[in-house]
Length: 88
Image 1 (cartoon, one colour):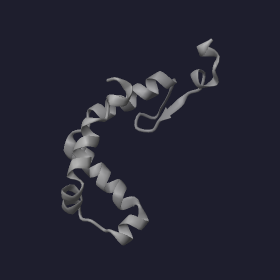
Image 2 (tube, rainbow, N blue to C red):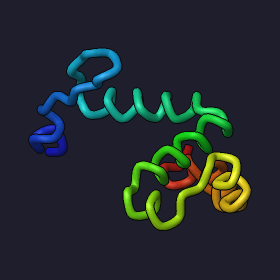
Image 3 (cartoon, helix red, strand yellow):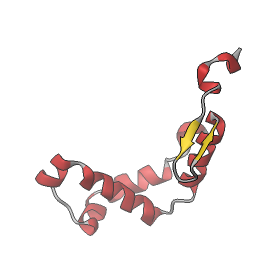
Image 4 (cartoon, one colour):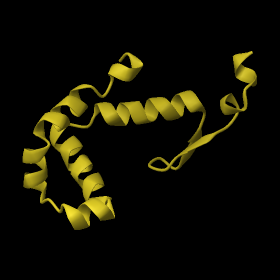
């Protein structure tokens, strides 16, 4: 039975709300958060992640506008394809 698996009995912590919830609520919360991200916010998050990587930052440092220009096609593709993996 599906509900017998430990993952369905465990509680997962949502840091933003300071709550422990079951797996379906956990996933839905972050899916909703992702739906509310606009393109500019998505680009900024991707650039911040890029700059958080020490090797990339040291070898290929890019200012935000340079990053957006260089990776424009990948950013647009990534933003538009965010929900295709789960059918929504």
